[in-house]
Image 1 (cartoon, rainbow, N blue to C red):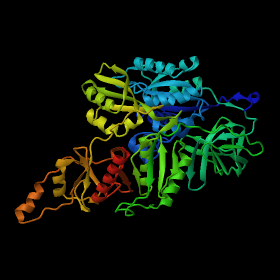
Image 2: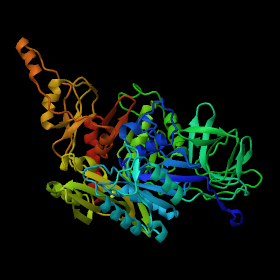
Image 3: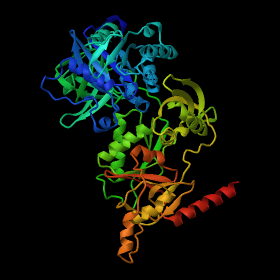
Image 4: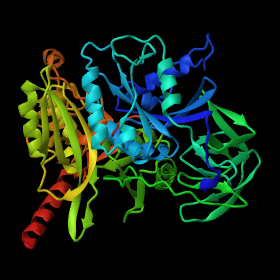
Length: 617
């Protein structure tokens, strides 16, 4: 964009809210919307209104970046609510192109967390200014001064400029909708926060006379008007009915016409006839993907495409071929699976999909276990039936050396549970970088650990800390390969034959380990029904019925008591998988199974592997 026509637009502020998971970011946006009088007095408004899909509401996290806008003192404030989890960093890296500043929201007890660092680094790299918002100031253990000092140190560690490090600080209670510049005095409204945004965050630099340029940052779909491209108009003016050019990543130019043009007002898109540079707009009628440029047809100039960090994990998605295949799913063919996964690429720039040697198997790469688990759960709810493999890390060749991804692992545990956690991290090749003892009896430790060591760690960590520990991770980059890591220490309990589980059969099997199924569940040979107490796998007969000889013996079956059945969530099931296992996913259930279902075939395959290893040695 040429400098000679540049000006700063005073009537708009584009700001992103960044924070760690569960620090109150979406709740704060709720408060800002309510106090800006977006809603009618008698209008019913759900809590966490920006978490728009069911998955976000259930998990209490933001997965997709979303736009909203409020007007304060005659200035339109475009707000982008961003994911707080590093697995959705692709969303974060995109939306930083749209904004000129950020609200950094941190918990008054926890302070800045790993994911906060990841997102803040992206903002500072682009030269954005920040406003620190210390939320949950009403918590009894609140440490506002300590959190402020920690955040200042974080800015310096991330290479903030002198101007960026001089950030204003506000103390908020998002639930009550109050903000104050002094933590010793409670606020009454969020007006101090609105004032800080207008005073601290600069208006967008624009050139209204230059040809129109818009970088597509997100896309949505509307049943009535088709695909909608969203992005910030960098220069020029766009009008309804205007002829434009779509420029793709390779520089190819396609002609198009804007059928509808929208800006944001509150939670709604508002149709307009014209939009000028600096505003965040939505365009219908142009079949553009994320990273494409929508430009003036008479003078098409591309903007730099969006670049995101490479994926670190991959897993295979394939057609379900279990004995229960096709019973529960609406979309079960390889064609439907392929169409759905490639369609996801248009929305999620951090995802990669590639064909494999098999026609019915695709390799899907993502930023972490949660990133891939959210995709699996979304497809399951849409009616897809398929099976996935255990996640594996993506290795790189650097100067002839094989390297693997590493992550920063931050944990918080009670002092009496520290020993078990240190042993756990050590077994998974974690290197201790820092450890601090807190006044409340908790210990904060920072490890550098291979991503391989994180696979299956969460459940073991929760067991070691009795569910009270907190762990967070952040991608650090690639480094030399470490030695072997045993991420799965116990074997599986495998169904011996087809049938329906019985209390009698499960009662006999529960002495062998932890069961995953209740009575009355259909199983097939080779399906995993629990976790063995030893390293090797074990076949168990969970469908066995008690032979009745008289009334007394039939009544004695009622006395059979089952210990606690562990019902696996999707995340637990993905984490539990061994290399020779698959997760069968359907709209109604997920089942862990062996790749080779019959015991005879598994024993034969193991024998062949041993013979091959003996020949190789």
